[in-house]
Image (cartoon, rainbow, N blue to C red; front, top):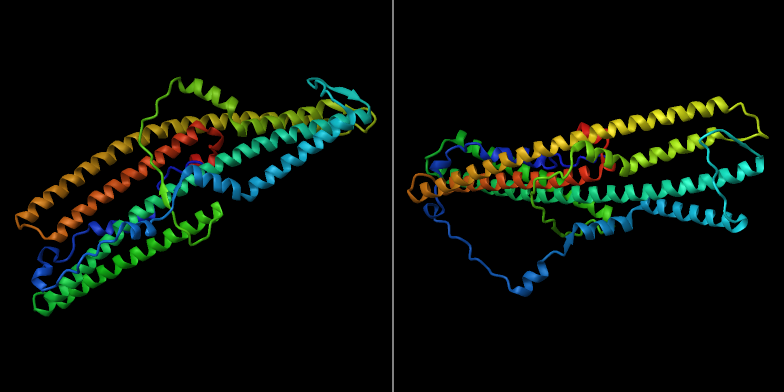
Length: 399
């Protein structure tokens, strides 16, 4: 599972939006609506009742997570398995009373009947522990997925508005160019260029809209809702630099003890040791060497898992600092875009630029704000995985 879901999920959307900041052919010479004799359509205001009827139902991360947990088939399988193991465990204890699992730090021989009984109890107890850990990990993974899709949808929604705005501007430039062409003020070649730009912008908007629809369908399937249902996603995340109250080494030591994936590995090592040391003297003992070898392998696997997890935690901590730098840079970009927008507005009042130039500067502000928002979402996701290192994997680190 890809735990480092903080990476840019709106990369496609941002790539599509790049074309909107390129200089437009004859943008400064475009005719205004008044010059073309176009009359603006009257604005129709909706009543409060009509607005309320059109409003989408709100959905928070917590509500979506509850729906996802309820709908998850894999989580239901884990719950059923856990219930089955608990019932089996209770039946054994009802039949034979309490069974004390012996110490198996050293090799201990026992009768066939006792060996079968204690082994069965041990396997049930170990299975219950594994199922409980699996249930916790699955719920944490669902929360990551829900947050990831929330941020992905909101990023794409913001990008779609931007791309659609660019498509509107390109279409307006083409229409203005066509009016100039009819007046003999623009060549056919330049008109064709404007038409191509308008068609490309329209295609980019349609492509991003299709991508967003696919994400909606995937999200709704995860939470068990109708594919066509839409929500207003409530995901208020603010950027706050992460502060450590201890050294990174102290954090790692504590994290390794609480890490659920490490605990699963420890259970497997514990089971291998039990199998190696708790022996049935009535049975053939030809498996002694194989069981000892398996135990050694499990110990090495546990050691390797801890070492890898330590590297993943350190890497995540470094990436927190990197994203804080990215946030500061994105803030600077937003400030610059806002300044350019204000300059464009002043130049419009002075008659030095067209309204389209101002709209393009405004799009620069929107794009910079979208980029800043995306960093905030990704940073929040990274903090969550850093504080829940059970979700950190080699795959996520590579991302």
